[in-house]
Image (tube, rainbow, N blue to C red; front, side):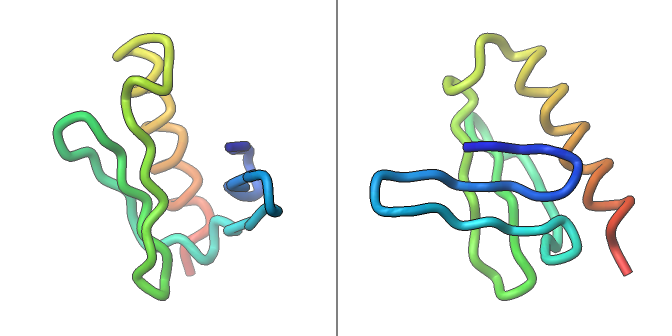
Length: 73
């Protein structure tokens, strides 16, 4: 998974999918997962264990919510 100021890219063996921030509706944390909802109600799910620490997970969540707010219409 790649996350930057322009988009989220989910990279897998068969290919990759990019979701630009203007296409992201919201993000929230539920227990040990971060859910990123797209405008067509699909979800990108990030487990907290995929990052080194809880602090890093929270920093990523703050970055994602900033990007959603910066790119919302």
